[in-house]
Length: 104
Image 1 (spheres, helix red, strand yellow):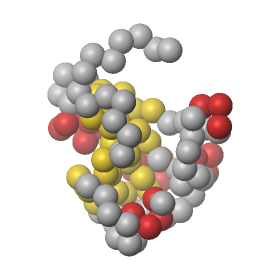
Image 2 (tube, helix red, strand yellow):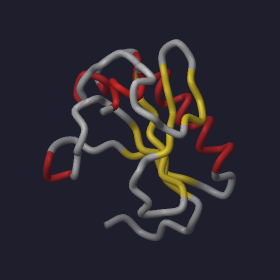
Image 3 (cartoon, helix red, strand yellow):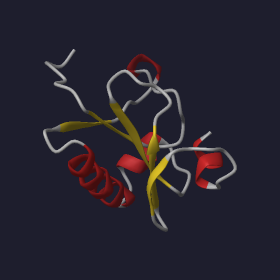
Image 4 (cartoon, one colour):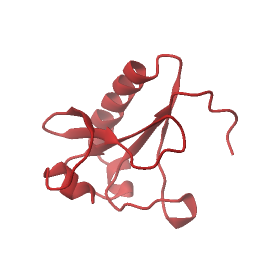
């Protein structure tokens, strides 16, 4: 699904895009703000976290987080089924818009 969004073949509410990174609203709405920061180059979660691209994706994610949630936000990344990872394409979650409370 993310590759189709990157290629603009699938609709997404895009908040940011450059030559390497795209940020769009997650279809899930567990909290008021749920965004996804995604490298345009397809890579797995493990590849993203061991590639220099993580620096660019995380920088963009942090900048968007500050813009959208000046009172605070979280950057999250899920690895594998037990962590609820549903997309193979590497990505970071930007969540906020509400007091998030303690970690689970």
